[in-house]
Length: 477
Image (tube, rainbow, N blue to C red):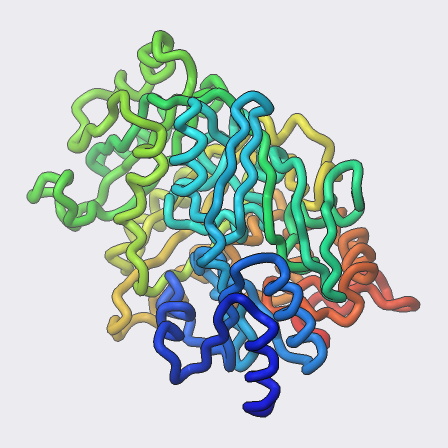
């Protein structure tokens, strides 16, 4: 790219073009996961869809890697195209709620907290994540799950339509009725198909007050707590979601000082049903008695959606490995308890997130997201300071733990939790029986693989085995 090319490109835009020496470039390229060290050659900050079209055309014509930054919260750092062009959506954060139609239309720079704040004015919500600073675009395009998933399914099960800029620079509206093949693929693999410039979600009556928070017990009660969790998740109404977190207690204000750094069993709880039924729904948790931390109470849904924010500060190094599981067997529970005690990472946690319910009611090919047999997300989530000298050893511990988790896996996994070092076979496992069809859709809308700075799915090639070289290439220009 010459300076003349960049100047001519900038004149086509209403938004900004930033080079590494420009003010604002660092903020536009700084990611949540400090473990990812990448830098684009250019950043475009659109003010609307026309700017996005111009950016896609510019990148395609010069064979530049192109990436899209929404919230920059993806653990693999897919928001940044190293040496390429990054489309930074941070200026596009509008949300329009139609309370009568029960829909919300949001721009791709929105964070979860933006949508929750606007929809909760009307006592409405859609299933998003559980950290309010996560970008809606990446979360949704990878499938999406959160505290409301047990009631309403994957985030993409609640997606009505998108506006998307394709690799050719076309602006399409995709839904179940318009470009249904594209909409099918967007719901779980959207980063591979184009740049989404608006999302329209279906909303449901939730809040504005729900019951939940965090509660924890000493780890020497782990067998008792995990047994209760097994019974609870087998019987809980869909309005109740409980994540089990096995970890060392953080040095947080709500943790008694004498418990800082000690192993605990914690539950992150959200009950979004009738407040009159909250006591009955949470009775199995209360029956455990004598917690060392008890923050369970009636509180705004927006607070439930943000109380884990402080546990994931921007700039730390994050490394996760997760799987989907269909059940919590005794062997799996024992493995997770043992791994918790063996873990050398002070800020790590072993996670069991209960997501089973509405997502299991749909057909396996209802959206490429699939994984309709998933009931839990299980895995190890590592976190440490950027100057940690044991970082390489910590990553190896997470990989070793993951080897044990895979024994209990459905075979599927969540694309948004994949790290940068996972190969194409891992991507294929995400989509399972839907993978071949996905590659065919990719070939129709992005045959040259313009959108490859992601957890990439290569387009199918005539005469090639549909699965391709699944263990090999992750990029194909």
